[in-house]
Length: 257
Image (tube, rainbow, N blue to C red):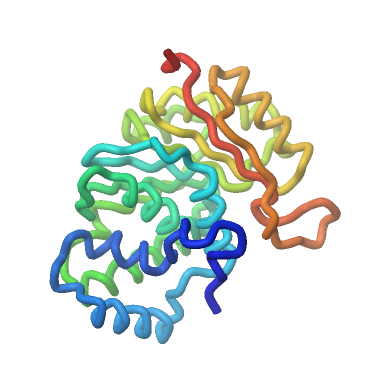
C-alpha cells in the first residue's frame, strides 16, 4: 500500500509512482489518465512498484530540496556507492520535476559501486523497468539515460569515465565509519565534479556518523543548506541504526554571492 503523503504536508508531495510515469512520458499527449491507470496496474502486476523505503526517501527529498532550485533542459545525476541503486527513479523523477522543460532523454543518470555483483543486479532491474516503459509508451531510454559502472571511487580511473559535471551528487547511507580517509577522498572527487549551482545530498544510518560526514564536507568547501532527521526511518537490528535516519543537502560555498 502506498504511503499517505498528507501526514505532515498535505498536498505538497506528488505521488512517486505518478512522478515516475511522468519521467518516462514527458509531454507525450498519448499518455492519457486512462493509460496512466493501466500503467499503474501493470507495474503492480510485474512487481515494479517502488518499495516503501523509496516512498519515504521521495518524501524526504521533497521536504529537503529548496523551492527556488530550478534546472535547465538537461540534468546529470551521480549516485555514488549506490549498491542495488533502488533510488534511481526517485532521483531521476525529482530532478525531472524541476527541469524547465521535461524531455525524458535529457535526464542522465550514472550509478557506481565498488561491488560489481550488487551493482549489476540494480542495473538489470533498472533496465527491466526502462524496457517496460519503452514497450508501453515508446521511446529509447535504457541505453542512453541510465549507466552503471563498477569501480573504486577513490581512484582516478573510475572518475575518468564519468561526466565532468553533475547537477546532483547523491550518497545514500554514506559510510564514514568504514574509513575517514577513504570517504574524504570520495567526497572530494564528487565536490570537484559538482556544477556551480549543483547540490550534494547524503543520507546516514547513524547520528554520530552523520555529524562526521557533515564536518568533512564543510572542510571540502561545501555549505550545509539543510539537515534533518527522518521521522519515518525504519529501524534496523544494530542499535541506533535505521534506514535513511538523517538526510542533508549542501551547495558549493564558492558560488555564494
